[in-house]
Length: 101
Image (cartoon, rainbow, N blue to C red; front, top):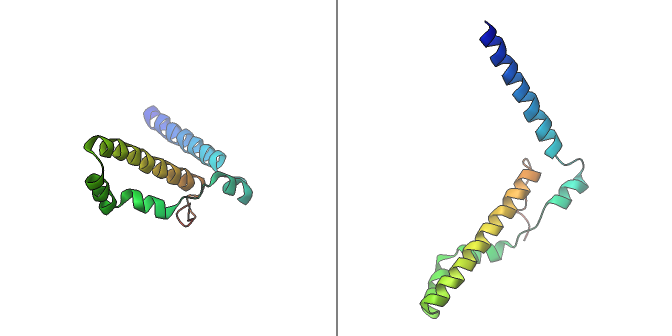
């Protein structure tokens, strides 16, 4: 019986903590939300993930230059994903940054 009370208390405490944290992370106003959002260049991102572009670079660069360029492109892809994640966290029910070009 004591174990059940402890478990219920722990679950209630965890639920309250999650609620407080989610409210603290939620922007207070539309202006606060807009300040957190960062537009992304969709055309540039599509270029980064285009297999035809990778093939073009492979054909026109030396192996060393291609590897260096590919690493930079992978870092850029990761930066785009991190930016989109930040937008989704800032506006989980809205469109995020995806609509910005």
